[in-house]
Amino acid sequence: MPIKNIVVNCTDVRRSVEYYTRWLELDVIGEVTPERAVLDAMTATIELRAVRRGREQSTWSPDDLQKGFRHIGFKVDRLDERAATLQAGGVEFKLDPLDAEGNVRICFFYDPDGTLLEMIQGDLQYAEVLDADGVARERALGVPARPRFDHVAVTIEDRDATSAFYHQHHGFDFIGTIEQPHDSRGFHIGYLKGGDTVLEVFTYDVPTQARDPQLDVAGFAYAELAGDPPDLPVAISPDGTKVYVDPDGFAYAVGSGA
Image (cartoon, rainbow, N blue to C red; front, side):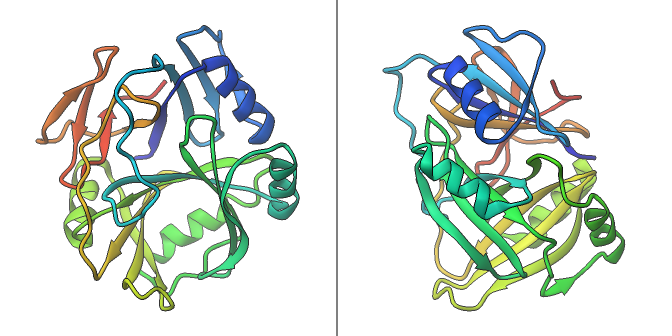
């Protein structure tokens, strides 16, 4: 069962719509209002929701040792060409295009309110394949004609516990791993596949820091997954949605998506 929807809070919905439609070629679904817009990212939707300037500041940090949400990833073609266009347009980058572990090419950049986004080109060559059928289904998606939502990355404490939980409640299967041998922190990546989408989970050999999710500040708010309501702490989003918080501080709702 897949990730259905990603809710991103923003201080100016129309500005964010312009950003995501221009730079990531997402299509608008329905009406854009000052409060909300929904965009088609092929395998999921990206929902933009308005938050007021001057509210509590986000505690999210780009340091991946902070647990919980890390970034939203999109599969693309022509990564270097796309990245050059973004850079020429003044988009702020965290990481310029480079060849990464797993024989893929990646880059990282920010949306107008600081949500970290990734573009990935190529099929991952896993260090260890745990589900050959799942990897085959992933590769069968092919090269997207426009950027396609691929994953949400999350830093976690316990890979086995996270894998078991998301398999039980949301049907995600652990398909493979990537190692980062040059990272002195002991950086390991696991891939939990649900439908055509992925939870990319980061673990480290050094201590990580906890962060409580914030549902009413600019940036990533929560994901919406298919599956069964879990037995987890609950927070309520500004629009009244029941949002579950997993042990690593990752926030998500359960439903059919936008």
